Amino acid sequence: MAKLKTVFYCQNCGTQYSQWHGQCKNCGAWNTLAEEIYEKKSTHKISDKKQNHIINIIEVETIEESRIKTNSEELNRVLGGGIVLGSVILIGGEPGIGKSTLLLQLALKMKKKILYVSGEESASQIKMRADRLTDIQNPNCFLFTEVSVEKIIHEAKKLEPELIIIDSIQTLHSQLLESSPGTVSQIRECSNELIKFAKENNIPIILVGHITKDGQIAGPKVLEHMVDVVLNFDGDRNHLFRLLRANKNRFGSTSEIGIYEMVAQGLKEIKNPSEILITKKFEELSGNTIAVTLEGNRPMLLEIQALVSSAVYGTPQRSSTGFDGRRLNMLLAVLEKRAGFQLGAKDVFLNITGGIKTDDPALDLAVIASVLSSNDDIAVSEKFCFAGEIGLSGEIRPVPQIEQRITEAEKLGYEKIFISNLNKIPKRKFGIQIEEVSKIEDFHERLF
Image (cartoon, rainbow, N blue to C red; front, side):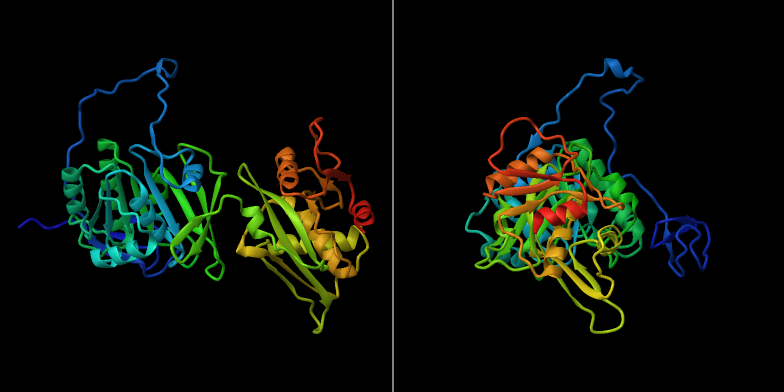
Protein backbone atom coordinates (compact mmCIF):
# COMPACT_ATOMS: atom_id res chain seq x y z
CA MET A 1 0.00 0.00 0.00
CA ALA A 2 1.35 3.43 -0.97
CA LYS A 3 2.18 5.70 1.91
CA LEU A 4 -0.14 8.71 2.23
CA LYS A 5 1.52 12.09 1.98
CA THR A 6 0.98 14.31 5.01
CA VAL A 7 1.68 17.99 5.55
CA PHE A 8 1.42 20.30 8.55
CA TYR A 9 -0.82 23.38 8.40
CA CYS A 10 -0.84 26.27 10.85
CA GLN A 11 -4.43 26.50 12.09
CA ASN A 12 -3.99 30.22 12.68
CA CYS A 13 -2.64 31.51 9.36
CA GLY A 14 -2.66 28.47 7.03
CA THR A 15 1.09 28.26 6.36
CA GLN A 16 2.18 24.81 5.13
CA TYR A 17 5.19 22.90 6.52
CA SER A 18 6.71 19.55 5.59
CA GLN A 19 7.45 18.71 9.23
CA TRP A 20 6.15 19.69 12.65
CA HIS A 21 7.41 22.83 14.44
CA GLY A 22 6.47 24.14 17.85
CA GLN A 23 6.04 27.70 16.58
CA CYS A 24 4.73 28.94 13.23
CA LYS A 25 7.44 31.01 11.54
CA ASN A 26 4.88 33.11 9.69
CA CYS A 27 2.48 34.30 12.42
CA GLY A 28 4.49 33.41 15.53
CA ALA A 29 1.72 31.34 17.16
CA TRP A 30 2.69 28.34 19.31
CA ASN A 31 1.32 24.78 19.01
CA THR A 32 -0.94 25.59 16.06
CA LEU A 33 0.51 23.11 13.51
CA ALA A 34 -1.74 20.14 12.75
CA GLU A 35 -0.93 17.13 10.57
CA GLU A 36 -3.31 16.53 7.66
CA ILE A 37 -3.44 14.02 4.84
CA TYR A 38 -2.76 15.71 1.53
CA GLU A 39 -4.52 13.72 -1.20
CA LYS A 40 -6.19 15.97 -3.76
CA LYS A 41 -8.51 14.76 -6.48
CA SER A 42 -10.49 17.08 -8.69
CA THR A 43 -14.23 16.64 -8.11
CA HIS A 44 -15.24 18.26 -11.41
CA LYS A 45 -13.42 19.29 -14.54
CA ILE A 46 -13.05 22.84 -15.73
CA SER A 47 -14.84 23.47 -18.99
CA ASP A 48 -12.54 24.04 -21.97
CA LYS A 49 -15.18 25.44 -24.32
CA LYS A 50 -13.24 28.63 -24.99
CA GLN A 51 -9.50 28.70 -25.61
CA ASN A 52 -7.79 31.60 -23.83
CA HIS A 53 -5.14 33.68 -25.55
CA ILE A 54 -3.29 36.95 -24.96
CA ILE A 55 -5.32 40.00 -25.95
CA ASN A 56 -4.65 43.74 -25.96
CA ILE A 57 -6.72 45.63 -23.36
CA ILE A 58 -7.96 48.06 -26.05
CA GLU A 59 -9.56 45.13 -27.91
CA VAL A 60 -11.48 43.87 -24.88
CA GLU A 61 -15.24 44.53 -25.10
CA THR A 62 -16.83 46.12 -22.05
CA ILE A 63 -19.72 43.99 -20.81
CA GLU A 64 -21.96 45.30 -18.06
CA GLU A 65 -22.34 42.77 -15.26
CA SER A 66 -25.91 41.43 -14.99
CA ARG A 67 -27.26 41.65 -11.45
CA ILE A 68 -30.08 40.10 -9.43
CA LYS A 69 -32.11 42.73 -7.59
CA THR A 70 -32.96 41.67 -4.05
CA ASN A 71 -36.03 42.74 -2.12
CA SER A 72 -33.80 44.74 0.26
CA GLU A 73 -32.90 48.24 -0.96
CA GLU A 74 -30.26 48.55 1.75
CA LEU A 75 -28.52 45.35 0.60
CA ASN A 76 -28.74 46.46 -3.05
CA ARG A 77 -27.09 49.78 -2.15
CA VAL A 78 -24.20 48.13 -0.29
CA LEU A 79 -23.61 45.61 -3.11
CA GLY A 80 -23.62 48.36 -5.74
CA GLY A 81 -27.01 47.64 -7.32
CA GLY A 82 -27.66 43.95 -6.66
CA ILE A 83 -26.01 40.52 -6.66
CA VAL A 84 -23.74 39.95 -9.66
CA LEU A 85 -24.22 36.59 -11.37
CA GLY A 86 -21.44 34.13 -10.56
CA SER A 87 -20.13 36.22 -7.66
CA VAL A 88 -19.28 34.86 -4.20
CA ILE A 89 -20.28 37.04 -1.23
CA LEU A 90 -18.93 36.51 2.29
CA ILE A 91 -20.87 38.05 5.19
CA GLY A 92 -19.43 38.02 8.71
CA GLY A 93 -20.58 39.28 12.08
CA GLU A 94 -20.91 38.61 15.80
CA PRO A 95 -23.00 35.61 16.98
CA GLY A 96 -26.67 36.60 17.30
CA ILE A 97 -26.29 39.85 15.34
CA GLY A 98 -28.75 38.70 12.65
CA LYS A 99 -26.75 37.22 9.73
CA SER A 100 -28.96 34.14 9.35
CA THR A 101 -32.10 36.22 9.85
CA LEU A 102 -31.09 38.64 7.09
CA LEU A 103 -30.37 35.85 4.61
CA LEU A 104 -33.48 33.82 5.48
CA GLN A 105 -35.63 36.93 4.92
CA LEU A 106 -33.85 37.34 1.59
CA ALA A 107 -34.60 33.73 0.61
CA LEU A 108 -38.27 33.98 1.62
CA LYS A 109 -39.08 37.27 -0.13
CA MET A 110 -37.12 36.98 -3.38
CA LYS A 111 -39.08 35.55 -6.32
CA LYS A 112 -36.17 33.35 -7.37
CA LYS A 113 -35.23 29.68 -7.04
CA ILE A 114 -33.01 29.68 -3.95
CA LEU A 115 -31.12 26.87 -2.25
CA TYR A 116 -30.61 27.54 1.46
CA VAL A 117 -27.92 25.22 2.86
CA SER A 118 -27.54 25.05 6.64
CA GLY A 119 -24.91 23.15 8.58
CA GLU A 120 -26.02 24.59 11.92
CA GLU A 121 -29.81 24.09 12.04
CA SER A 122 -32.27 21.39 11.07
CA ALA A 123 -34.97 21.99 8.45
CA SER A 124 -37.70 22.16 11.13
CA GLN A 125 -35.75 24.82 13.09
CA ILE A 126 -35.34 26.93 9.95
CA LYS A 127 -39.08 26.55 9.18
CA MET A 128 -39.99 27.70 12.72
CA ARG A 129 -37.83 30.79 12.28
CA ALA A 130 -39.30 31.44 8.83
CA ASP A 131 -42.87 31.33 10.21
CA ARG A 132 -41.91 33.84 12.90
CA LEU A 133 -40.24 36.25 10.47
CA THR A 134 -42.84 36.64 7.75
CA ASP A 135 -46.15 35.37 6.42
CA ILE A 136 -44.71 35.38 2.89
CA GLN A 137 -43.60 31.93 1.77
CA ASN A 138 -41.43 31.48 -1.29
CA PRO A 139 -42.45 28.21 -3.03
CA ASN A 140 -39.06 28.24 -4.81
CA CYS A 141 -37.04 28.27 -1.57
CA PHE A 142 -35.42 24.86 -0.96
CA LEU A 143 -33.69 23.78 2.26
CA PHE A 144 -30.74 21.40 2.47
CA THR A 145 -29.14 20.51 5.81
CA GLU A 146 -25.73 19.16 4.87
CA VAL A 147 -22.08 19.79 5.71
CA SER A 148 -20.35 17.82 2.93
CA VAL A 149 -19.28 20.23 0.18
CA GLU A 150 -19.29 17.41 -2.41
CA LYS A 151 -22.95 16.57 -1.67
CA ILE A 152 -23.92 20.26 -1.72
CA ILE A 153 -22.37 20.76 -5.17
CA HIS A 154 -23.96 17.51 -6.45
CA GLU A 155 -27.46 18.57 -5.31
CA ALA A 156 -26.98 22.12 -6.58
CA LYS A 157 -26.16 20.79 -10.05
CA LYS A 158 -29.44 18.83 -10.08
CA LEU A 159 -31.59 21.66 -8.68
CA GLU A 160 -29.97 24.47 -10.74
CA PRO A 161 -30.91 27.32 -8.34
CA GLU A 162 -30.53 31.02 -9.14
CA LEU A 163 -28.91 31.75 -5.76
CA ILE A 164 -27.22 29.60 -3.11
CA ILE A 165 -26.97 30.62 0.57
CA ILE A 166 -24.58 28.64 2.80
CA ASP A 167 -24.78 29.04 6.58
CA SER A 168 -21.95 28.75 7.42
CA ILE A 169 -18.62 28.10 5.65
CA GLN A 170 -16.98 27.03 8.96
CA THR A 171 -19.36 24.03 9.29
CA LEU A 172 -18.53 22.52 5.88
CA HIS A 173 -15.96 19.81 5.26
CA SER A 174 -14.43 18.14 2.21
CA GLN A 175 -13.91 14.37 1.97
CA LEU A 176 -10.48 15.00 0.45
CA LEU A 177 -9.10 16.12 3.82
CA GLU A 178 -9.31 14.29 7.14
CA SER A 179 -9.13 17.38 9.35
CA SER A 180 -12.22 18.50 11.26
CA PRO A 181 -14.60 21.21 9.96
CA GLY A 182 -13.57 24.79 10.76
CA THR A 183 -9.84 24.23 10.35
CA VAL A 184 -7.86 26.44 8.00
CA SER A 185 -7.33 23.71 5.39
CA GLN A 186 -11.02 22.68 5.37
CA ILE A 187 -12.25 26.27 4.97
CA ARG A 188 -9.77 26.90 2.17
CA GLU A 189 -10.63 23.66 0.31
CA CYS A 190 -14.43 24.07 0.67
CA SER A 191 -14.24 27.71 -0.43
CA ASN A 192 -12.17 26.75 -3.48
CA GLU A 193 -14.74 24.17 -4.58
CA LEU A 194 -17.70 26.53 -4.08
CA ILE A 195 -16.02 29.44 -5.88
CA LYS A 196 -15.11 27.17 -8.79
CA PHE A 197 -18.74 25.95 -8.98
CA ALA A 198 -20.11 29.53 -8.85
CA LYS A 199 -17.85 30.78 -11.66
CA GLU A 200 -18.45 27.77 -13.95
CA ASN A 201 -22.25 27.77 -13.56
CA ASN A 202 -22.77 31.55 -13.21
CA ILE A 203 -24.67 31.04 -9.93
CA PRO A 204 -24.06 33.54 -7.11
CA ILE A 205 -23.26 32.12 -3.68
CA ILE A 206 -23.59 33.89 -0.30
CA LEU A 207 -21.38 32.47 2.46
CA VAL A 208 -21.90 33.18 6.17
CA GLY A 209 -18.64 33.44 8.11
CA HIS A 210 -18.03 33.24 11.85
CA ILE A 211 -15.67 35.77 13.40
CA THR A 212 -12.96 35.46 16.01
CA LYS A 213 -12.77 37.35 19.31
CA ASP A 214 -10.64 39.96 17.51
CA GLY A 215 -13.48 40.69 15.09
CA GLN A 216 -11.80 39.00 12.09
CA ILE A 217 -13.51 36.36 9.95
CA ALA A 218 -12.39 32.94 11.22
CA GLY A 219 -10.16 30.90 8.96
CA PRO A 220 -7.36 31.83 6.56
CA LYS A 221 -7.05 35.42 5.43
CA VAL A 222 -6.87 34.09 1.88
CA LEU A 223 -10.65 33.42 2.12
CA GLU A 224 -11.33 37.16 1.99
CA HIS A 225 -9.00 37.49 -1.01
CA MET A 226 -10.73 34.66 -2.88
CA VAL A 227 -14.32 35.93 -2.66
CA ASP A 228 -15.69 38.87 -4.66
CA VAL A 229 -17.48 40.74 -1.86
CA VAL A 230 -16.83 40.85 1.90
CA LEU A 231 -19.68 42.28 4.00
CA ASN A 232 -19.52 43.06 7.70
CA PHE A 233 -22.76 42.99 9.69
CA ASP A 234 -22.23 44.69 13.02
CA GLY A 235 -23.95 46.64 15.76
CA ASP A 236 -24.47 46.61 19.50
CA ARG A 237 -26.77 43.79 20.58
CA ASN A 238 -28.04 46.04 23.38
CA HIS A 239 -29.38 48.43 20.71
CA LEU A 240 -31.80 47.79 17.89
CA PHE A 241 -29.72 49.05 14.97
CA ARG A 242 -27.53 46.91 12.72
CA LEU A 243 -25.07 48.26 10.14
CA LEU A 244 -24.12 46.43 6.95
CA ARG A 245 -20.81 47.60 5.46
CA ALA A 246 -18.74 46.39 2.50
CA ASN A 247 -15.07 45.84 3.37
CA LYS A 248 -14.37 44.63 -0.17
CA ASN A 249 -16.44 44.85 -3.36
CA ARG A 250 -15.12 44.01 -6.82
CA PHE A 251 -18.33 45.23 -8.46
CA GLY A 252 -19.06 48.46 -6.60
CA SER A 253 -18.10 50.97 -3.94
CA THR A 254 -16.95 50.00 -0.44
CA SER A 255 -18.17 53.27 1.06
CA GLU A 256 -21.91 52.49 1.15
CA ILE A 257 -23.74 51.45 4.30
CA GLY A 258 -27.07 49.73 4.99
CA ILE A 259 -28.99 50.26 8.24
CA TYR A 260 -31.47 47.80 9.73
CA GLU A 261 -33.51 47.69 12.92
CA MET A 262 -34.02 44.42 14.79
CA VAL A 263 -37.72 43.92 15.58
CA ALA A 264 -39.83 40.90 16.58
CA GLN A 265 -40.51 40.09 12.92
CA GLY A 266 -36.81 40.14 11.99
CA LEU A 267 -34.76 42.91 10.39
CA LYS A 268 -36.53 46.04 9.21
CA GLU A 269 -34.89 48.48 6.78
CA ILE A 270 -34.33 52.05 7.98
CA LYS A 271 -35.09 54.42 5.11
CA ASN A 272 -34.24 57.66 6.97
CA PRO A 273 -31.92 56.90 9.90
CA SER A 274 -31.47 60.56 10.88
CA GLU A 275 -35.05 60.91 12.14
CA ILE A 276 -34.77 57.77 14.28
CA LEU A 277 -31.26 58.27 15.69
CA ILE A 278 -31.99 61.78 17.02
CA THR A 279 -33.90 62.03 20.29
CA LYS A 280 -36.91 64.32 20.29
CA LYS A 281 -36.11 66.37 23.40
CA PHE A 282 -38.82 68.17 25.35
CA GLU A 283 -36.30 70.52 26.97
CA GLU A 284 -32.87 71.72 25.95
CA LEU A 285 -30.05 70.09 27.92
CA SER A 286 -26.37 70.99 27.98
CA GLY A 287 -23.93 68.59 26.31
CA ASN A 288 -26.24 67.56 23.44
CA THR A 289 -25.35 68.45 19.84
CA ILE A 290 -26.13 67.18 16.34
CA ALA A 291 -23.37 66.10 13.92
CA VAL A 292 -23.88 65.84 10.15
CA THR A 293 -21.84 62.79 9.18
CA LEU A 294 -21.42 60.91 5.94
CA GLU A 295 -21.37 57.12 5.55
CA GLY A 296 -20.17 56.56 2.01
CA ASN A 297 -22.41 58.76 -0.10
CA ARG A 298 -25.20 58.73 2.45
CA PRO A 299 -25.57 61.77 4.76
CA MET A 300 -26.76 60.99 8.26
CA LEU A 301 -27.37 63.07 11.39
CA LEU A 302 -26.18 61.71 14.72
CA GLU A 303 -26.73 62.95 18.26
CA ILE A 304 -23.57 63.52 20.33
CA GLN A 305 -23.81 63.58 24.13
CA ALA A 306 -21.02 64.77 26.43
CA LEU A 307 -20.70 65.03 30.19
CA VAL A 308 -17.89 67.08 31.76
CA SER A 309 -17.57 66.97 35.56
CA SER A 310 -14.91 67.49 38.20
CA ALA A 311 -12.69 64.45 38.72
CA VAL A 312 -13.49 62.72 42.00
CA TYR A 313 -10.32 60.63 41.94
CA GLY A 314 -6.77 61.72 41.23
CA THR A 315 -6.71 60.70 37.56
CA PRO A 316 -9.42 62.20 35.32
CA GLN A 317 -11.44 59.68 33.29
CA ARG A 318 -11.80 59.78 29.51
CA SER A 319 -14.51 57.50 28.15
CA SER A 320 -16.20 57.38 24.74
CA THR A 321 -18.83 55.13 23.18
CA GLY A 322 -19.01 54.98 19.38
CA PHE A 323 -16.18 57.51 18.98
CA ASP A 324 -12.41 56.92 18.89
CA GLY A 325 -11.05 57.46 22.40
CA ARG A 326 -7.64 58.57 21.14
CA ARG A 327 -9.24 61.22 18.94
CA LEU A 328 -11.24 62.47 21.92
CA ASN A 329 -8.00 62.89 23.90
CA MET A 330 -6.51 64.83 20.98
CA LEU A 331 -9.51 67.17 20.78
CA LEU A 332 -9.37 67.82 24.53
CA ALA A 333 -5.65 68.63 24.27
CA VAL A 334 -6.35 71.09 21.44
CA LEU A 335 -9.08 72.76 23.51
CA GLU A 336 -6.68 73.18 26.44
CA LYS A 337 -3.61 74.27 24.47
CA ARG A 338 -5.15 76.46 21.75
CA ALA A 339 -8.32 77.78 23.35
CA GLY A 340 -7.35 77.91 27.04
CA PHE A 341 -10.08 75.65 28.46
CA GLN A 342 -8.92 73.92 31.63
CA LEU A 343 -10.17 70.35 31.14
CA GLY A 344 -7.12 68.49 32.43
CA ALA A 345 -8.64 67.97 35.91
CA LYS A 346 -12.12 67.01 34.72
CA ASP A 347 -13.80 63.75 33.74
CA VAL A 348 -15.07 63.69 30.16
CA PHE A 349 -17.63 61.14 28.93
CA LEU A 350 -18.80 61.03 25.31
CA ASN A 351 -21.54 58.99 23.67
CA ILE A 352 -23.01 58.63 20.16
CA THR A 353 -26.64 57.63 20.63
CA GLY A 354 -28.21 54.58 19.02
CA GLY A 355 -25.14 52.34 19.32
CA ILE A 356 -23.69 53.73 16.07
CA LYS A 357 -19.91 53.67 15.55
CA THR A 358 -18.31 56.01 13.04
CA ASP A 359 -14.89 57.47 12.28
CA ASP A 360 -15.93 60.44 10.13
CA PRO A 361 -13.62 63.41 11.03
CA ALA A 362 -16.60 65.75 10.48
CA LEU A 363 -17.82 64.75 13.96
CA ASP A 364 -15.00 66.77 15.57
CA LEU A 365 -16.87 70.08 15.57
CA ALA A 366 -19.99 68.55 17.14
CA VAL A 367 -17.83 66.79 19.78
CA ILE A 368 -16.10 70.09 20.65
CA ALA A 369 -19.46 71.89 20.85
CA SER A 370 -20.87 69.14 23.07
CA VAL A 371 -17.89 69.22 25.45
CA LEU A 372 -17.94 73.04 25.69
CA SER A 373 -21.70 73.01 26.23
CA SER A 374 -21.42 70.57 29.13
CA ASN A 375 -18.40 72.39 30.61
CA ASP A 376 -20.17 75.78 30.59
CA ASP A 377 -23.55 74.15 31.38
CA ILE A 378 -25.15 76.08 28.52
CA ALA A 379 -27.51 74.23 26.19
CA VAL A 380 -26.94 74.35 22.43
CA SER A 381 -30.08 74.99 20.42
CA GLU A 382 -31.59 71.78 19.05
CA LYS A 383 -31.95 73.60 15.70
CA PHE A 384 -28.15 73.85 15.31
CA CYS A 385 -25.96 71.19 13.68
CA PHE A 386 -22.22 70.86 12.97
CA ALA A 387 -19.85 69.50 10.32
CA GLY A 388 -16.12 70.20 10.59
CA GLU A 389 -12.74 68.64 11.31
CA ILE A 390 -10.42 70.05 13.99
CA GLY A 391 -6.68 70.42 13.31
CA LEU A 392 -3.91 70.33 15.92
CA SER A 393 -3.44 74.10 15.71
CA GLY A 394 -7.10 74.70 16.57
CA GLU A 395 -8.20 75.49 13.02
CA ILE A 396 -11.49 74.15 11.67
CA ARG A 397 -10.78 72.22 8.50
CA PRO A 398 -13.17 71.59 5.59
CA VAL A 399 -14.94 68.25 5.12
CA PRO A 400 -15.85 66.57 1.81
CA GLN A 401 -19.29 66.62 0.15
CA ILE A 402 -20.47 69.58 2.19
CA GLU A 403 -23.42 70.27 -0.12
CA GLN A 404 -24.95 66.88 0.64
CA ARG A 405 -24.55 67.48 4.37
CA ILE A 406 -26.18 70.93 4.17
CA THR A 407 -29.07 69.56 2.08
CA GLU A 408 -29.74 66.75 4.58
CA ALA A 409 -29.75 69.17 7.53
CA GLU A 410 -32.06 71.51 5.62
CA LYS A 411 -34.41 68.65 4.75
CA LEU A 412 -34.75 67.68 8.41
CA GLY A 413 -35.67 71.22 9.46
CA TYR A 414 -32.47 72.55 11.06
CA GLU A 415 -32.04 76.33 11.08
CA LYS A 416 -28.23 76.73 11.30
CA ILE A 417 -25.20 74.63 10.39
CA PHE A 418 -21.62 75.41 11.50
CA ILE A 419 -18.94 74.55 8.93
CA SER A 420 -15.37 75.57 8.06
CA ASN A 421 -14.89 78.85 6.21
CA LEU A 422 -12.54 76.96 3.84
CA ASN A 423 -15.37 74.84 2.43
CA LYS A 424 -16.39 75.71 -1.10
CA ILE A 425 -20.13 76.21 -0.86
CA PRO A 426 -22.27 76.16 -4.02
CA LYS A 427 -23.70 79.53 -5.05
CA ARG A 428 -27.32 78.35 -4.88
CA LYS A 429 -29.42 79.50 -1.94
CA PHE A 430 -30.14 77.12 0.93
CA GLY A 431 -33.08 77.25 3.33
CA ILE A 432 -30.69 76.89 6.27
CA GLN A 433 -28.34 79.52 7.70
CA ILE A 434 -24.68 78.63 7.07
CA GLU A 435 -22.26 79.79 9.79
CA GLU A 436 -18.64 79.71 8.66
CA VAL A 437 -15.96 79.51 11.36
CA SER A 438 -12.16 79.29 11.20
CA LYS A 439 -10.80 78.83 14.75
CA ILE A 440 -12.05 77.22 17.96
CA GLU A 441 -11.99 80.59 19.77
CA ASP A 442 -14.14 82.15 17.05
CA PHE A 443 -16.44 79.13 17.10
CA HIS A 444 -16.94 79.37 20.90
CA GLU A 445 -17.86 83.06 20.73
CA ARG A 446 -20.40 82.55 17.94
CA LEU A 447 -21.97 79.47 19.53
CA PHE A 448 -22.51 80.94 23.01
